[in-house]
Length: 147
Image (cartoon, rainbow, N blue to C red; front, side, top):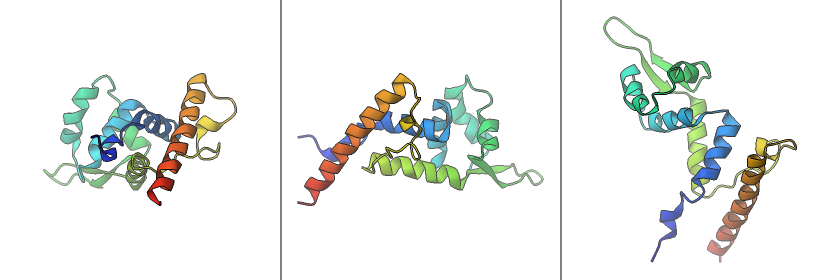
């Protein structure tokens, strides 16, 4: 029998799209930030280790630094390399992803979710319909768990 605990990736695509739009991230940006999340500190070599999978985007490191997703933890001193870490902003964004994977609803207001603005693409409308449906299911599951 299938356990519901093994089903929390069901809405990953919807959550991923919400996050990419909300934070103006590319798929490669998000993949890299998710990889680095478990690396408390990292240097350029550790970054490049995973970047080889995302090799088509040679500007990703500088873009993530410029947009303040990655910050310097320790500057280069002598033979010691510069060490980086994810910023507080990046950590909070990823924690938000995990909360949503674990059943937190996605906002359905235009203030909290750009997909709910009036003039959006067809695909955003499809995603927002799925978000509404997903939130209904989350509410139902929460209601049933309280009984």
